[in-house]
Length: 398
Image (cartoon, rainbow, N blue to C red):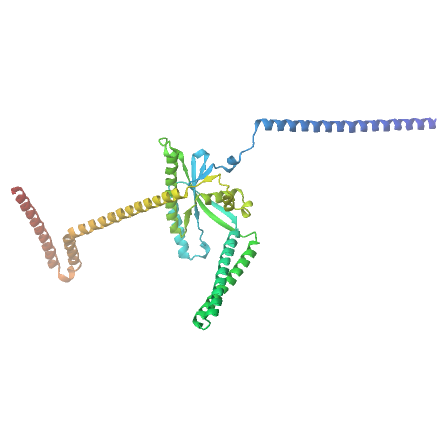
């Protein structure tokens, strides 16, 4: 009996184990099937989204990303010619090394600069890695010129020594000149060596400060339809504003200049290619012929800027002359009024002096003196009236 129960329990346990294994196998199979379905659905959705993006969306163009159309006539053109920008590069000052008086003058000048602004501006600071490859090229070129000059002087010295070795004065002068050029050559080599070592440091940075002026073509109105005339008027307006700001900044001990088209291209090139600008600068790109983004007309612009500067100077001189004449006329009128009222001022001052010294000269004497001054004043008025009437009669008789 006991063996039968044990056998029955063993069979039941075996059946339970088989059921558990079947359940585990079913669960694993179902999980793998669900995972495969999700993967297929994801691939299908990605494929559909790619097809949709390919049919409905396009990549953003480079010109839309750069947010400007072209660089023309020292201006950045935006929004299909509806907005123009001109940039002023400002030379920074070392404020911390100034005295208190100089700091106060700079602050006062900056306040005046802000108070005189009549149009919106933007301040832009660009940090650049100093690229001294151009400086090294210039140094090498000048060093080569110095070397050629040194060789020429040495040949001249040898020639003089062979032909006229007794001319000690000429030989001494040539020796001194050769020593001077040799020292200059050695100094130049040291400068180039130190500069090349400095160029190995990539963390040498410099900040450039700019003031950006904007002008909308809509401000000109709808009367002007010629694009060339419109651009010329916008250039004249922006250049006049820029010169006004440069003159105002001079009170802050700051210098500024308007960027030309090449400098504007360099500004934008560094802004959009900060890493590449260290290796391949915009000057090399221009020499290579990559000039599609801007166009220049240096001769025309120089003439236009010269004419604008002349007009600004003439207007400034005229305004200064009118202001001086106005102040001078006011002073002349004040002098004339003082001269006309001089007798009255003298009488009044005399009466004040008598009143202040009344106790010394006596009350009766003081009052009689004041009365006499008033009577004399009245007699003068009567004489003036009589003279006026006499002149009037003579004129009417004539």
